[in-house]
Amino acid sequence: MKQSIMVNIVIRTLLALAAVSLFTFCFMPYLRRRILNTGNAVGMAASLLVLLYAVFMPKANAMIAAMWEKKAGKIFLGAIAAFLVTGIIIVIVESAFMISAANKKPPAGATVVILGCKVYDSGPSVMLRSRLDAAFEYLSDNPQSVCVLSGGQGPDEIVSEASCMYEYLVGKGIDPSRLYLENRSTSTRENLQFSKQIVDAEGLNPQLALVTNEFHEYRAFLIADGLGLEHYAVSATTPLWLFPTYYLRELFGIMYEWVF
Image (cartoon, rainbow, N blue to C red; front, top):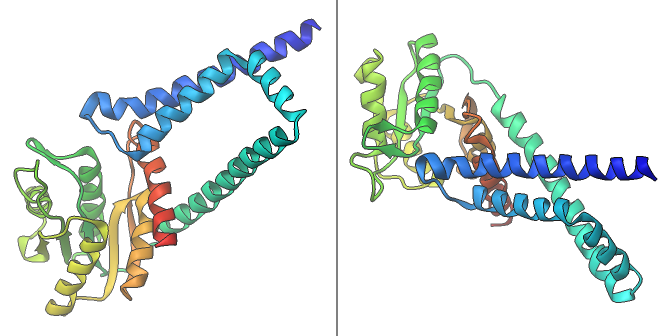
């Protein structure tokens, strides 16, 4: 009996710690940069549900047992279980595709396309800077490569993302003649559509090294496939405090691309 109580306490404690950890990671982007999107909203909601279950586990388990005694309860609980299992399978499959896409290395001399991201008054966001640093490394290793900087100007941005990227890379020593600005796009799809127009118009190498964060490469690949592009990945590493938020959001983004 005492052993059973101890096991119960350990399980509840681990669930509570996991819930608090997830909530902290999802809340941190909002706390630091007022970032609130589908990813951290869902993450915070899920973590609160898990925390409530951990706190009220005995009552919750008793309620579940009582529901299981009824036919309607069995159907309801079975539907929830099926939903959760399906969700877990989808997440595993999407994650496998993300990992595979992020590791599709480009050949030497590919045309680099940097997908834009948030710009602040002080300069590129942490996410955009990580992409720029990854692109800089590839451009430095491949002096024959040129680069398309793709990103328009949002309503709360003082310059276009393409202009911000241009200043950053030139400041790090990249020859301006290697850089092409695409400053109209407002989404990943437009990033690739408008960049393709530049590649075609300028006669650039059609082998494209798409520079974005590792979790985002697969969805970019899906869109690139639809545009008939030959694409590879130069993946930027996402800071840990941002990764859960954007990873969770990307899961929904990939499902949207699959369906629509």
